[in-house]
Image (cartoon, rainbow, N blue to C red; front, side, top):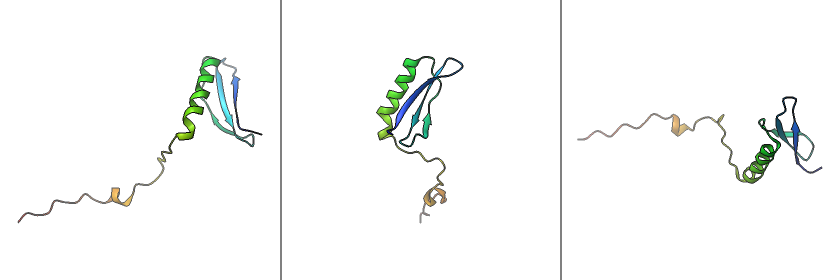
Length: 77
């Protein structure tokens, strides 16, 4: 089964979309939108940008260079 976006209207009357992978599992879920048109625009935005999005891993530890104390200026003389 190919991946697909699924748009649903919730009990509050707001719309959400979810991205389902090839295996049918949900990969991502959107925020709530007031209108179906806005949800469809959200899908279009994801389709345009996801392929070129970078990863910002904020769980990664700082590099050793970043942890090292700053070098002091050499003494003059």
